[in-house]
Structures are given as C-alpha cells and as structure tokens.
Image (cartoon, rainbow, N blue to C red; front, side, top):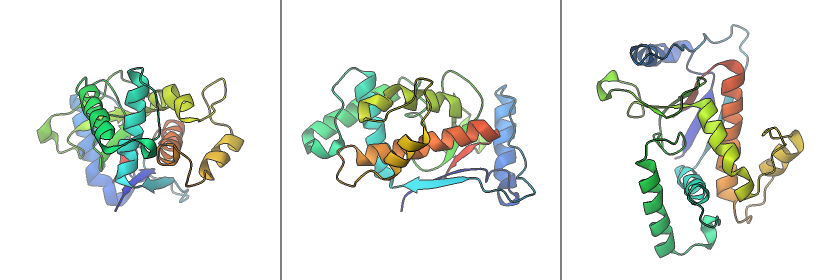
Length: 204
C-alpha cells in the first residue's frame, strides 16, 4: 500500500460528489475556487505515487532544513536519532503554517489558489483529509526552498529543467536521499501540473 497522487481526477463524474463537498466548504471559508470539469478530449492528468514512509522522510528533511539542523538522508540515521527528529517534525507541524506538514498522509487536497497558511475546514464539512487543504503554490514554494539541501539542482527561476528531472527519475536506489528525492520529485511535478491546469492535487 502507498500514497497515490493525481491531478485532473476531481473533475471526473466519479468524484463529482466529493468535488461538490469541497467546493461548498471552500465557499463557506471564503475561497472562490472550483475544479474545472474533466476535458472532453480525454487528456491525461498527472498520476504518481510512493510508499507512505517516503512522505514522512521528506517531511523530516524539510524540518531539519527549516530549523537549521544538518540535513542527512534517513538511511544514515540510527533509531534514537530518527525518533528525536520525528518529534521535531511534530513540533513544527503544530505551528500550523506548513503546507507540506499540515496535511493528511493518505487523502485530501491541494488546490491551485494562494493562501499563506493551510486551510483547516470544519470537521463537519465532510472534506476528506480531516478538512486540511493545502495550496499547490504554497507546497511548491516549500519544496523549492529546501531542494538544494537534498541535492536537487533547480534553475535560477526555481524550475526543474528536463535534464535534472530525468536525473532525479533515474536516481540509483543506493543514493543517500533516494526516498526523499523520489517523493520531492513527484510532489513537485504534481504542483506544477496543478498550477498549470487549475486543478486540485488529490491524495488517495
């Protein structure tokens, strides 16, 4: 089992009810965004996925960078240090200001609308992921902010050129940051697709 990530499915007929629940909750919160209908031409969206543990490992390196600690791949860390660092992740999560941290591990949405902090919609809204909704742009900015710390080489404008994207996709399994970079790369691509098409990133 693992986390699936997609862009473009929320507007399909099969998820129409879920989309309407999200739209109503966002409207109540003062956010004017709706998922466009799925294109009639059957154009493919973005689909990716990775083990749930990869997301935790990515959050760990993000927090280490955020608090100014040395950033290391999880594979070189003993169990006691890992537990201490995950407590630090919890502490930073409870600041409620990070789109990467304040989101369900297994369901929910990022939407292509700018807002500073993640949205916490009422529990009774019925929005999956516990009502936590992130901004695709906010998540992208966070990913760009610590890319260099895990060895991702962004262009001066913060984009990932095709050659670097291909390098990340072919990263050897024994690379110290392989789990973190794999998750980073998939989320980065999902953010770019979401912002380009005006569609939500869906965790499922």
